[in-house]
Length: 142
Image (tube, rainbow, N blue to C red; front, side, top):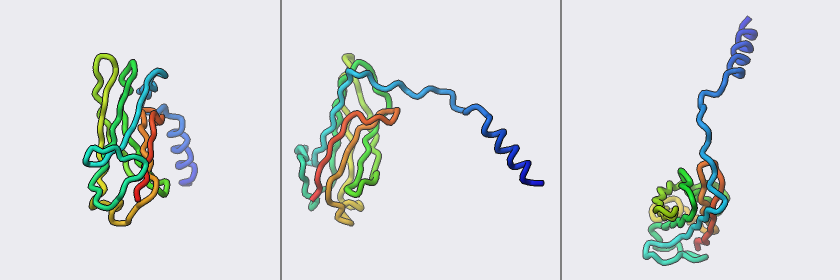
């Protein structure tokens, strides 16, 4: 007798309207431009190859130019094995022309990156509110 009750309850749940009626934010306008760069603690451009030895943290810099605020952004950091390692928030401050910058930090010293010598190609992707990739860059840790 329990089976019909469970099936009826499941069917009733499937017919309900979703509770969240908010629309997802609109993607940024096509004329918007975003760029990512990675630098070390001495404000040096990290370039394509970075030495892991003695590296305390990496700074991820974002430059945005567009007609509108893109909404909430974050940077996905992917390890050399292709796994999402971190999501760094990017608080973008725009001027009246729609240009802005943001910065995020990825700790390296004292983290699994250092402990397990996670060397190889690290990928950084700026992700918009709808999950779209707006800019990408990569570095090689050696």
